[in-house]
Length: 475
Image (tube, rainbow, N blue to C red; front, side):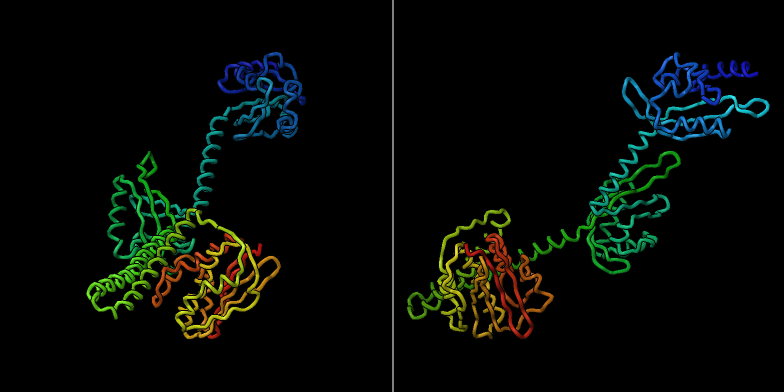
């Protein structure tokens, strides 16, 4: 019976269009193996009659020998789906994937006499799936690193599925269910018609790429987003749908708004002294025959030109910093001489007394003109924001290889919540409606000090005045 069975299996195995083999005995001896199986092993018919271990010693360390032994001992069929096999091909191991099974063969009395082995090579499918999984993972990582939200909408039902990030941008919790009508209501009314027109056009296949503000559903927070999307037509049982991304562009929008505000403020700040200068020149033209009235007009014109030059200098300095072109010309000088000369304009006006204290005879090596700018800015701010502080102290102290210069006033002080922003670009322009200027002075000062390798800061207490300070290396 065994021989008859083997003959039958031999015919079946050799004619099979899949990988097939027959093994007998507890030593798992190869009795039959078709060409497809031998090709997969990288062997020829000389392995027929050998045990599976003798025929394929390179499999040692892989689980297949154990599978065979277990099936023969227990009589339990082993079935594998997309299992990896490292096979020796042309002298080098290559990785393949197979769907296969080891089925035990029994005598009439139930004893096991052999194993039939069939297999399908699914390497191409598994690798394609792995490539897709990798691409999906790379996409997820790209979306995550770009802080993108993703969304999907069923065209027929308008059902929306959104990622947690997309929900967050619209002010929802991760477990909330999104509704198209509610989402539309979150768009400010002045933008709603434009957004809906673009959204409706997307259903006809047009490109959907639009920026608009939204009001958070739960937190009521204003956010600007960029939404992109594409229509995917129905394929087979897959219905047509819209899918796309959401990107938080609030920071960029705020920068754009700050830029617009700054341009508006800069235009206003430049217009004021120019208007004054123009008026003074017109009066000079009319009163050129009355010499007594000319000096005040010249003085007013000079002040206006000074303001214009200061504004232009600030703009040029910021431009140089943005292009990393702000160069330092370091020379040795006595710091007290610089401090005395740079603030003469305050002394001449006579409204404030400047008191120099400390190690004013110290010689340092730095860019005198740039440090002059920093001190003038700090003293001018004290004059501007602490007009009732009759005495302004300028202190110098040496600490190791650094020198610290402090400008102290007895003004109203600065609110604690504003201190961290004082050296930001345009901060004064953004937050003050009562003082002139572009809000660039302290920002420029901080950049000058940083390029010297020093530090800059401020201490202030409401009602007790403010102290602006900076440090630079002595040498």
